[in-house]
Image (tube, rainbow, N blue to C red; front, top):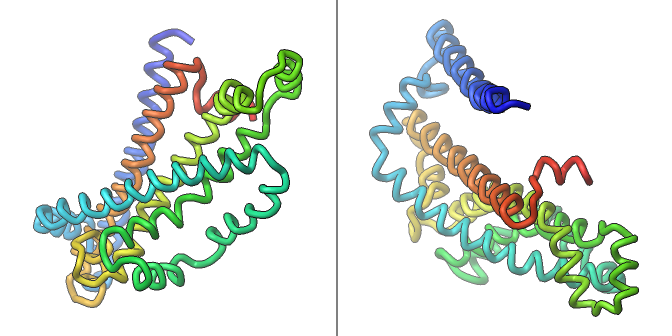
Length: 268
């Protein structure tokens, strides 16, 4: 593909979601106006925007609080998730014994775990970060374990013929192969970490000033436009984390391994 063709393709990819968003907003505004529904039930996009501007300082502080807790939780999930995946890839017995517990973290409702964690561990920042880690660790464990295990058998045999140690095989063969899987897992876990942090904040009361606390306060009031604005910021935060992980992951793969996330996905 020529340079102009690539630029046209990128422009279309960027324009498509913008056009859809504009269409949704126009339809939403027209629907509220035409139906005459009360703004307490469903505020219009204009009212949500005004609420967003009106609450900008509080939303900025809350967004920073939630993002910090989510990033701490995501970092913890990457460290413990990758460590678990390393252990799972080295022993089928370990995988059989402990993998069901990883599944348990995904299947137990976070709304049930959150109050237990907050009460038992910390009714503050670290409790929220731990909840964020719990909800975001499963995609990293599964993706990384898959990448570590799905290695070309011919390459494994080549390493054995050259008397490579288990550590050398892990570091020089399995880990590079698993990197695209790991980045894909982090992309999914990033959004989950935001959700976990917000859910955790529902149970910490007024000790924090995150987005979850703001949502909890706004949901029982009559200012529905402010509630919508807070939810919108929460959504945009999750999108931002996804985009940042994608861009950084693509750069790492291209810069050091000559791969891409899309190419890795086709080769799976």
